[in-house]
Length: 285
Image 1 (spheres, one colour):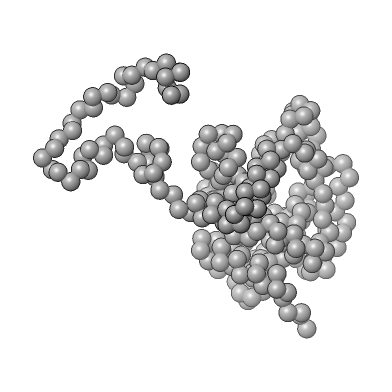
Image 2 (cartoon, one colour):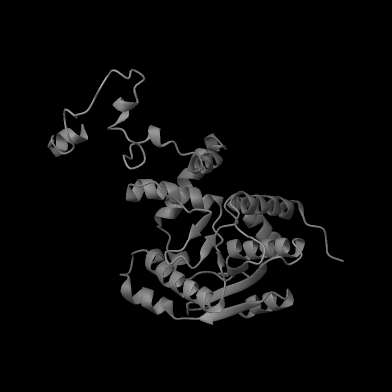
């Protein structure tokens, strides 16, 4: 007889199920390829999706895909045993992206960008060749809000990780079922489940990543106001273009035409775009 789910598992199942329902992530007949990296997040995601699959009476398929990137010290023996014991269909594919990243990226620079691009290409190709229409990634709430702030601070744009994304070639839909789940709950659940974690010796060995600095900043702010992380997540879902400055989303230049007084005409701009060539110093002021 299967044991009843723990308190933390019930919480995780609730928020994962809510995310799937809110964004219509999984439909009947879907073949979901779960990207299992060997970390706590992907282990948790796979466990929860497999539980939800059983609850649905197998209305969708779950398949675990692990990419062995030939990192030094990689040992997937216990991972294979864990998957086999739970009768989860899976494949562990070996592709040496580690050497490529180490060769292309100078020492001291972050590996994440190139590593993720190489990994993403392999994942998409595998999904296409094996007929999986959904690709599940284990990013959680804290990943989403850190990405938002990193984008603002370091790239000058407003973007995060969408809960559901159509791939560029329009052949796959990427889903993030843990988008409502807090990392601290994942940590607690992973400890409870005693997952056979495989540490990352590539990005995991870099201590000065911007993502870690942004994470510490959010944690510090949350000490003063615990609602800050959830408020940031809510902000991603509550965009108000009229209160920002993106002219592609809001017609600021034509607002005069929206005035209630229909007798007032504003056909010609006094200062057309590009007419005023301000010095950089004046522009900053």
